[in-house]
Image (cartoon, rainbow, N blue to C red; front, side, top):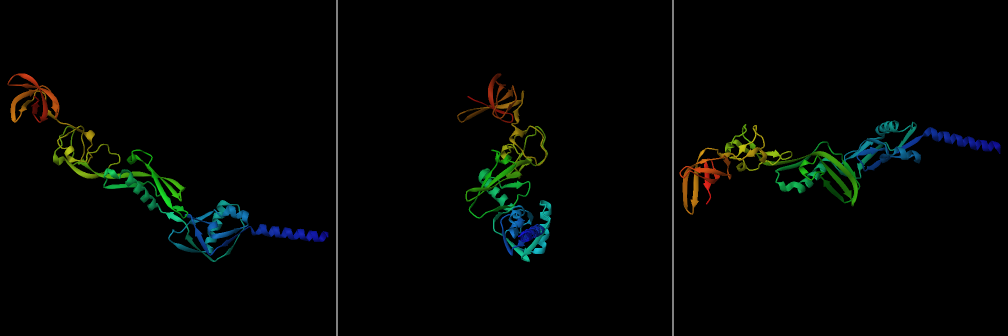
Length: 320
């Protein structure tokens, strides 16, 4: 009996040593359907033994073909990629290959490309601030978003901007759901550009200059970063600049002040209306004033001071 037992034991040792020597066997399939942007060993081959398959199946080889393409690869090419991936991520040394001479691969997942992601963000941006009347409205990503792979089903997209002032947001968050379940939640850094017609200087203008019709024009400018820009030239004409502005600078409400129309001690015309009758006389302003200001004016005919409302250059009106 002992020789028989020894023989059985010896055969078992030989089988065990043979199995260890073989290591891992990778058997390529003729066709593979993938569902991610990267091609993995488990996508294209069966791996044995099972305990090794769990570790090796998820190792990435290279970028998968475009979701509209079907690509075939020679097994000799795939073997080289498999060996490199295994060496870089595992201590497994013994690998044997079998199966098909070529593997044909196609996508079995829904794919959302980078340009589609930006388009989705722009659609939601239009809904959020389209009422501003921008002639050009777009989200410009800082980096190209990654392509998303999704299981088949009903897709739904939600876009969030972190800043209540949407134009000031420096990123957009895209939440992707399939059949009501969140599959991706990604942040896309970038900036929002909203081009609107605004008033800009047509020439270099100095502090204190009163703006004329030829000093301004309308141009499309990115509203992002601008504060209270003027959108109508008439709001600028006749106003005085509080600071110098170079040519092609956007004019904001804060840049303007009402010009002084009446200077202190200036000889002005004082008008008064009573019904259809208008009376005018000469007077002297006792203080400077802008349009709408009430200043004291000395009536040179009566030598009395009366309040008058400034209504134009060198012109004030007495209210009865």
